[in-house]
Length: 237
Ligand SMILES: NC(=O)C1=CN([C@@H]2O[C@H](COP(=O)(O)OP(=O)(O)OC[C@H]3O[C@@H](n4cnc5c(N)ncnc54)[C@H](OP(=O)(O)O)[C@@H]3O)[C@@H](O)[C@H]2O)C=CC1
Ligand SMILES: O=C(O)C1=N[C@H](C(=O)O)C[C@H](O)C1
Image (cartoon, rainbow, N blue to C red; front, top):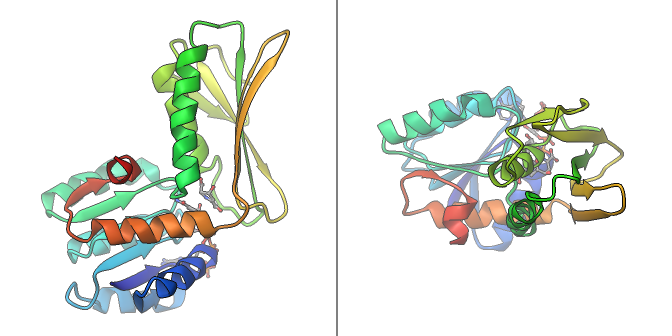
């Protein structure tokens, strides 16, 4: 598979390492200083783009890929207010857009566990819900995309919650997401239900970026023959 890496930072480099190990080739690495190379690429030179840049650049990088009919697997977080526009354009151009706030298989199992726990806890309103994410000091966005997916999972399954707030005391209808930035932590997410007498807690802790990067490479392999708006639930079915 011929891959263009868009964003050659911590994730771009880890994806390159794993992709080469799986027999793929990297035809271009796009970063801040060579944006013109992405514009110059054509869909005949590349099978898939893997986009891990930053919240300010993801949207225009994705649009470029969609216009060029290059399937794009995106993991960048913090730009999702524009996601519905990307989805519409993907359908209009009959292109391919795969998105996940977290590509780790473990986190995607955790998403399911989180929904099941929220369903179980919904009749027990004496418990307060508390969610927490801890990431390294270089992270640009807050809350993490993963924490937003977790909060949305709770909102879907828990009767009295219909919104989330970040680093604020929540109202009764809100799920609180507390964000911490600490050292070099790759990503730790916790959900707690706390009553006056006890607490129930689930945590996913990434030990490195390898799980995120491997999931993104597997998604890139999987989208090859597919069109439309896709995500981890489609791939893991
Ligand atoms: N979905 C998932 O599973 C995961 C998602 N992420 C997300 O992926 C993104 C990247 O994370 P990470 O690799 O740790 O971040 P880094 O800051 O290490 O890397 C981002 C890279 O993108 C570069 N960049 C900046 N602007 C552009 C542009 N216009 N086009 C292409 N590249 C550009 C940056 O260059 P410069 O430094 O010079 O600005 C940097 O090299 C974040 O949004 C993060 O939240 C991270 C891990 C897992
Ligand atoms: O910026 C990161 O590092 C990570 N970002 C993603 C997010 O915002 O959820 C995924 C992972 O937690 C690492």
